[in-house]
Length: 153
Image (cartoon, rainbow, N blue to C red; front, top):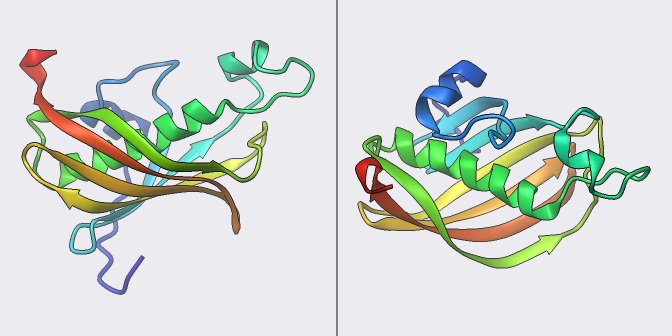
């Protein structure tokens, strides 16, 4: 992220005030940084062996499902959109393009969730997202979303 960083530290309780998701589908543990001028956000997902999806996703060789990594990235983007002033609306996923799964995510990994808003308006937008394990790229994709009023859901 750029020089114009505006540091936020959101913990799980703060995130629950922003996102409508709850266990087991709240997939962002913390927000480390938000840069509203650059439309960037950095979140964290701590992947533990106790995650409920590991019971059925390759038992004995636990790998985090790719769709859940994409969901964690979408949730991170949703927090960015909320902080951009669209707090009366919810970002609903419309499209995923260019998704590439580069490295398996396993228990003990700490996913760094990067999202950059490419376009955000009152109707929706698109983010460029990547999940990193340290310096290694695990997942990348572009995610498009619609913004809908909470009362419409």
